[in-house]
Amino acid sequence: MRRLAPYQSGLWLAEYGDIRCQLCRIYRSTLQSQLPQNHSSAIPPNNHSFFTNLRQHINNRFDSGLLCSHCHHSIIWLPKTFEVDIAAGTVLSIQAATYYDYPIRQAIRAFKHHEDMTKLPLLLHVLRQLPRPHGCHQDNSVIVAMPTTNQRLVKRGFDPVSILAAQLSKHWQIPLWYGVERIDNTVSQQGLTRAERLSNLNNAFVLTETPPVKRLLLFDDVATTGASLQALGRALYQPATNTASASSLPTNRYHLSAYALAHGSQYR
Ligand SMILES: [Zn+2]
Image (tube, rainbow, N blue to C red; front, side, top):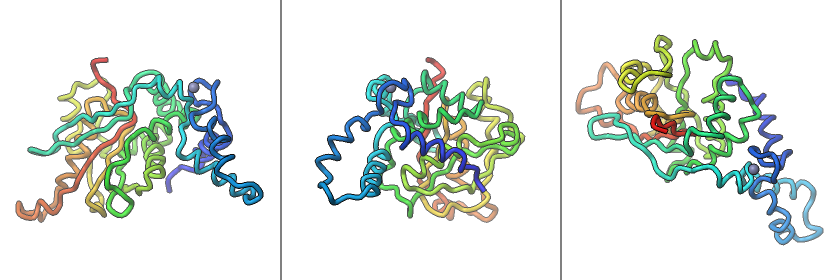
């Protein structure tokens, strides 16, 4: 059973109860201020109950931003992906929504390390800037959240990446899949060089079941060198099986792409 319920209520309030920008807290969030004009022309008089209006309001809020337009445009949104190798001649493209800089960096840290749920609406806004993968839907794709280890889960008491991934799943209407486990005896990636990260991550992921579809959308909160997503991608791209012969390998291969809230460049 995943712990999601306590966060849902906070998000519900941010979505529908609080119309201020989730960053500056001064201005109204992006499309909210446009709602009266849009709605007064779209809704004929005497033909709509309170609930119809509410439903339209909610639908609009789902599509709208949670930031005011000033704050939205003050953040650098990343149009480009970066790539890491997952097999000979095969790369994994990683799409991050923005850089791991102010104000996203502070929000992610507060959420991850201090379980600060007030930052979740801002992070949700960032998630929604990720382009929905072309051609992916609930029947041909799953989202694979970067698994945490039991040790980290016990230490933190919650799994921030799975909470964010659940929001992405809801936004894209693509189910989550939990068929990968992360082995406990790897040390934290923080402060390691790229080479150290990669060797630390080798064999860190184990498939506990076969993916139900061919398109796997990997998700992590922050991708710096991309080493964690690369290791997860390698584990999924060519899953170790006892019986696989060279000729049967291609049928085990999946179409992978990766997504992150933020790209933490080492050089910034
Ligand atoms: Zn603002």
